[in-house]
Amino acid sequence: MLKIVLLLLVAIGCSFAREIVSLHKDNVNVTTNGLASDVKTGDERYCHGFVGSNGAILSSEPNGCFHVTKVQTGIYQIYFHPVPTTPPICSATQVYPRSFQWSGSTLDNLIIMDVDEYKMFYTTGDAHGSKSDRDAMFRCSWD
Image (cartoon, rainbow, N blue to C red):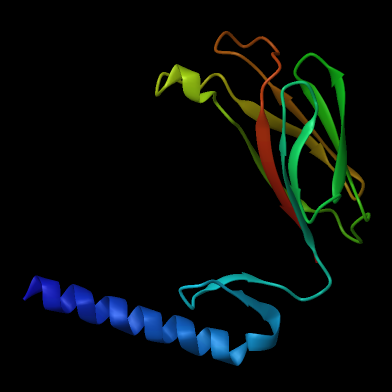
């Protein structure tokens, strides 16, 4: 009985997702399984990226939406391109190396220090509270 209920809920969810896609088909990328992957308006109002511990851009979406300056050990500045019309809302996280498996410390972290229309400052640190160079990912969006 539980399997039937779960299958029914999945079917309803898939049907609902197809309805959303059909309503917004001009503004949606559709994946091979028929589900919506991301709404596109043609006027990108977001930027997300992966920044290496040395300040190198490892990936960005949309391509070229930011450049980064490593200010000093553990402090990075992201500049947005094009400049948003309003201050963005941002989230970011440190990317802990896989070589350490699951032994990461919650103290070994990232803090966003400042965000305005042009840039975002963030700092990364080690498990002892000292600023340290770390890989990081972020996403910012705006109106």
